Image 1 (tube, rainbow, N blue to C red):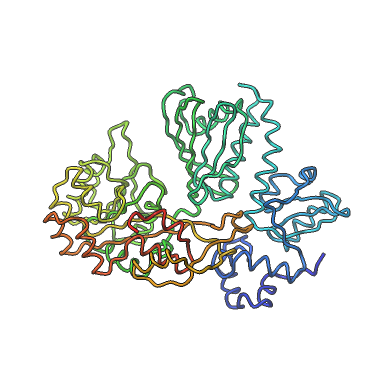
Image 2 (cartoon, one colour):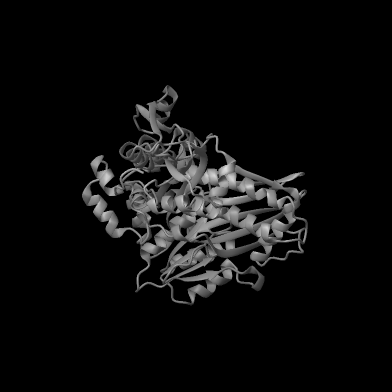
Length: 541
């Protein structure tokens, strides 16, 4: 066992973090949070730097578990719960020692516990948190599946309960936004959407399908006898120690019901506006839009582009004691302190339009309408914004300026749209290059050409090589790309006089508007994302 040193001292000795930053992190970190995790959260170190310091200073080797030959016989030494809670993974026995991959090889308590419980000496090696979680999910889940094969309808439900807990646990730890349970002819695929991409996580036996779907429906208080019509529900629960809100959607398919579970992690629910990846110019413009006393501010983008997060961050910023903020949403995503939130309920006639009418009688200063879906909601929202209220809402369009024709197509009078609209923000999410394996390469001629067309010069672009931190993907997490349009008098009169959208865009270009593609390219230049990601979101390269 190496000398028991403290992580702060090791990082200081390696010259990675100053004493001031370590002290500041210790002061502000959450209770029971480890120093390494707190430093990672604040962005003072990367996981790769942390591992390299531990490897060099403690002489503990680092492993990648991606294709590591794990001996499944040693799984019995460590229970799945202990492995998940402490981010450890037993690998094999060598020379009488149990080799264990650890996220934190300085966790001497768990090492002592394991030596007592296994009767073996423990030989720690270092692996990244995500690498360990993927391995736990892959190997321990395989162990669990053996039980499930024996289930027949109506027999012991415990294995199905355990299976669902395992799926949810893994999804939360791997930061998945959705779980897809896809029935096929002979088996059922479970796929996780991580950073916007679906990955097949595991395949479960066909005979478990009905019990698993029934279990989900019971938790979501849905009708378990109804299997031929779509159903929607929600579950609020704790997964390990994380409070989550699960949105359940059941859809009948030819091979049985497909279930999609959308996961909202309530710990990370509320972000500040400064964390929304706005560029400096866009941030100033957006602040200017949302601090107006009245008018309509719209966010546009496809489903899952982070519009709701931006809306909540905006409302959180404006949430002061002297302001009455009321929202009407379908569903209420996150509950915010000090804000009156109304849940749409079409079954009893509480639609967006009806709710909005009642809200106007509640003396609000700021109103948020979850989504403008029809002419009636659009008209009431616009009239509210013209009578001294600041109104936020979302709409599905391809770019910010397409919002105006969309509202007019809905049947709203053009002069009402143009006079009420303060501004529009278009938003997309792109995958972020993993900080631990970020590499740069020379830009190709075609890439340089695209940058030049958009008024940016560039020599190098960045990409992720793929490492154990990002499970060989090259990406980890997502960031937002924006287009912020402030409606000035010229744009308003151009739109009222039916000027073509192309000419309006030309005028906006002259005014220095940063379109989605430009904001995206700036983020490529800064090494935050790749050309491939930006090419996928932009329709106007």
